[in-house]
Length: 175
View 1 (cartoon, rainbow, N blue to C red):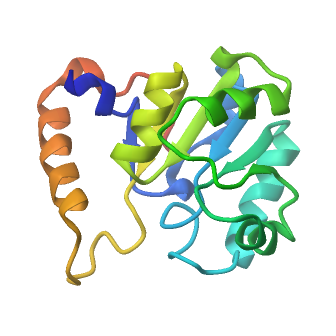
View 2: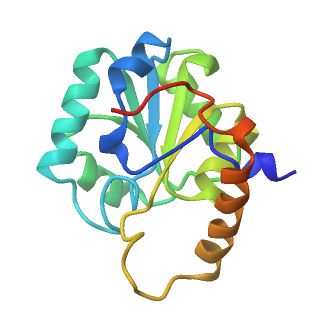
View 3: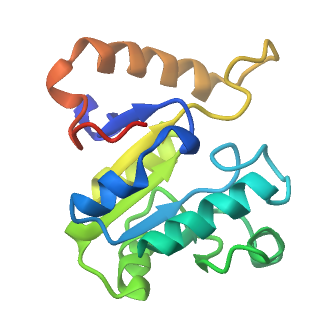
């Protein structure tokens, strides 16, 4: 039961991932969440994120932003990135994960999802049969008040850390 909430990998940030290794392992498309995965909630893209996507695209990856945000928010964020996108995606529903794979014109087993939330991003990817990476949400180390979902996520992550068979399912993909 809990395995549906476990990520294939859990890393510090999108910058800790070796995208060349992922490509060499057969992945051809990456779907990303935006808020608290790539930038703080509601922020525009940064030079670092723009460069990250430029690098990912130069490797040969197709990219797609899969977000519960509206079209205007995503288009503003995406202006220097040029990724495909699906707005109002209703994660964790499977429908738009599968639509994203179709839009990138790749196979499910060539697809990876990267996000910061267990109950939307990771659960939806697992339900859809898409390999995934959980990143620590931006603001993870801040001492601000966190919602109940983030506290429950911490419990699930503690159980995930105990269950070694569910960890590192993508191999050595960190820099």
